Length: 424
Image (cartoon, rainbow, N blue to C red):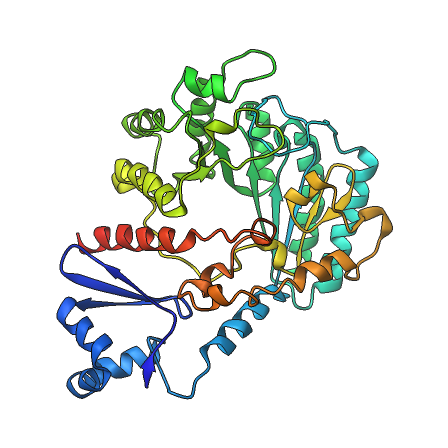
């Protein structure tokens, strides 16, 4: 037997070591001296810990000498990429937005989905449900924009038809929405519930007036208090994640926001959570000096400081085995306000479409095949990395030319946070 290539060790301050296997998503907790024996003298460990050896073999930390682990990783990847039990669609009812955030990559040319396009999209998606009903178990909808809640009637109309079709076929329907939460009314609240939206992703980039200056509205109105009120009004019916976009200009403001969210009891475990994202460059950003030039490790160190402030409200979940990029899945599509089809919502900005819903073409097209055949196994440096089975090389579009490798730093911190709570 030999140690798995995909064991990820993390040193804990309590004199222990966590060994996480990124293929099986299992973990083992060792005393330092026991772990040292395992890694330096396997035969000695096998002799002195026969029961432990059996458990480590069963959970993937040890593998037989003749096992090629990479074959297992490849099989898992393609099984997920070609999984026919899940269908995921991202719908963009409008590219219009009432805010003017400089870092937003969405096309500034506003467009709203027409009634005709809405009807054809419904027909397109219900046909997919019908054709795949024998193997489809879950149908997932993500509402994106622009600001999708500027078009609540479109969300209500399309959702109603898709929900009825899924219910008839015994398919589980799930929806989430990406919204700035500035336009919510009691009527829109009810539409989201009726549309079976149970997850909300929203954004705050600072406390009070600072957020309003950074995420400025087109009508000059300040929305921070409105967003906070809506989070409080909605959190009993929806899981809400507050995404904080970070660059050099606001990194000092974020602790004030985090403390405010905790002091006002806005955060709730598993109900109202916080996530962090480093702002990437795009064609709209004028002040390039505000973007981070830090290494990936330094960036993760910064985010870890914010997680420390959050304390019990920090993310404590262990990583799950999944595709890192939904565009690599066969059963995923993005549909914009004009009815154009894409594999990734960022492709909409670059106008890389593989067709439209009006074509009524349900077979895979060339662009889809090209995305599906993006081989994450071509980078030798990735194959040697113990984290590879979790990230599969990251976002294909971002990593085509430059390898962006941050997951190892994210994973280390996730495990430390999880076990700090576990040990307590």
